[in-house]
Length: 136
Length: 385
Ligand code: SF4
Ligand code: SF4
Image (cartoon, rainbow over all chains, first blue to last red):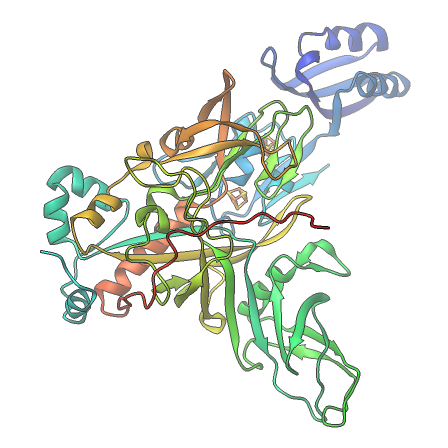
């Protein structure tokens, strides 16, 4: 048995498709949904742990890629260097779970770890390079 | 009774000047009215801190022995323009490293210099009778060279458009990462705190104005490039509804600090310099008190669709900074989250620093030597045959 943790980003047209059902049924995988944010008609995000045979996992991943779901390995941690951050806000533009947000009083950047899907999108979005991602 | 620059400077000298920031003055006018505020307040400090691509530094390296007439110059492998005399060069913020590409550029060279780091200087020349050396390869620091002048042809835009993306793919722009299907909308202006928004008709900000630049005192050298005073304006507030006036700024790089000057990388777009600028506005009369009291709900800008890579991008309507700052706007019936690219947090810090300088008599106002153009056309570049 093998295990793999991944982040899925699906385009709006796939949000209402039975993707999870197919992963379980067709590829014989055990799924553990760690985090998810799916709103109808909008881009969806899901952090998944796949458990199953090596072949099943590989085929499942190929199926996801074929239907145009973006698959990324799950980051272990997001590190934000608060000393270096200028609170410009460029990173919140790509953080759809709103883990990164601006405090509306102080206009300082706030990072709510509990909402973070560890997708890593904020890393290239920060012009000052103060956000880093650690992988397993 | 209108005030003059000289009268305000006299008050600053005596430590009596009343100084508030462009945000603080808004509540003050609400409470006391424009007339009272014009009488009681002398200076309002404005500020901005954001990416400003049209920036760079003029450096003079001094002469080696035997000397070289530098014709091509690289600083940490970033090409600097050396077509000015023998050992002068201009390092532009957006120039990319020839070895590291988008990871490092002119803005990083500037940041490294002000951080006190060693920077590799490489130069080549054809050699002349008076300048026989053909190659130079060594290190410089900010202290080892002669002048280091920050000279930014276009900074502190008077308003800027909001960028969004209607296409079905993510695009990477100087306005940040724009997610598909109106996934986000990015704006880049400190609005009610921003310098030229508070003096929309350039009554007090002009050529020669002393300013806060990158942590020290600098000056407005000229109108900025692409200065476009004829931009459409709100009839009531006179504030432009899209990018309009700009400023060309100059200051001593040797006195600047990394707190207010930072290199930035816009993913898959390129390198730029984040510049901190603060400009004092003297409350000469009631009209100036009125201008500085205008707040975000009355300051509007235009939303543009950046997925159309043309000179004229589709206009998706108008929005106030109040709505933008609330975090969500409506575009084509869709709720779209917004993100700022300029730091209001840092701009507030600059406005406070400038306020303290003036209160403590460390900073005096300089009356403009010449006004910025109020009627000048912004010309396009067409292909002529
Ligand atoms: S990794 Fe970054 S962009 Fe992704 S959810 Fe976490 S904070 Fe937001
Ligand atoms: S983009 Fe970077 S510097 Fe700007 S607020 Fe986010 S973490 Fe801070």
